[in-house]
Length: 167
Image (cartoon, rainbow, N blue to C red; front, side, top):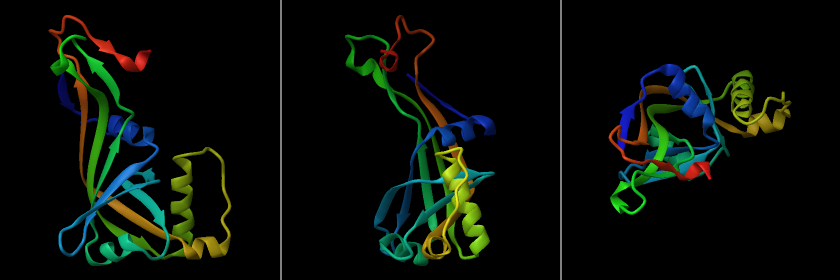
């Protein structure tokens, strides 16, 4: 199986939009890692997230706003030879991003971010109550570095290739 870089912006965005969750990694002041699965929205090189106003992640990010965000499409089990364990792998696409969390406090920008997040999951328009907008913490991450890969691609020399996701 082979791994190939994804370089086309449209393809990278397609991977991001195909994901129902992202995984956000951060490190506390002692370097201890902390990773959260999160709902998100994406628009023009920016990831938007939301949470409660307080919590463990907020405490970490106030001291160290640097984050890594991972996206991965639904993996599918693939193999080139059903009898050879080493020929098995997972086929998927992934995007790894680095950036810095900035908390958005402006009311109108928070509503805009909530709309971007909801567009990831629905084509509907939504309304938000003023208390809900005031009480939500909006995280804005401008993507500074992006690395994308397609992995589990069968070798061109494979005698046989089977994809379990097609059953």
